[in-house]
Length: 229
Image (cartoon, rainbow, N blue to C red):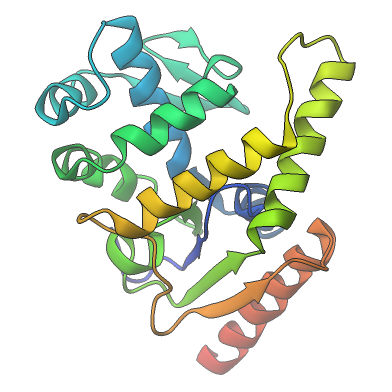
């Protein structure tokens, strides 16, 4: 990791829209993009494939060290196989939240996450990008929204998928409960809990569109570059 390479760290709770915002910001700036949440989904999927219990911290960390993970042209590759769709299920979202509490796994993934920091810059989203992985990032954003707003957004996403052919059952109440449980795990875990970095900018998106949220981040980055010039 090179201190001369600019990093924009975007943290926040599940379904806050941080991933979409981060990816669009990276595209606008021509930066690399790190979806750290995808790493935990990948590990959860690999563990399931290998019949490893998501609560077995040491086995999960050992499994993670053997994985060949690549992000190519919008695709997520695991050991040469495209798993882009497989990791985006609700089950793998829950699995990611379960395995992410394990300190040995977070340590195992540290170097991998640092490897994404390449010129001309990086936009990284997750829950500990600004507090643990890239604590020296010049711009840190904590992107959030009320739990009910996030649940409604997730519900609409799943509803759209169902209309496109998915047969999964959809319940707003179940989604809301799941988000509340994920938030509790993310905030309460001993290793790298979800907290806002002291020098982060709070971005509440309850009443913002994705485009407006992207503009907020870009404006703050522009302000940073102007101050640094």
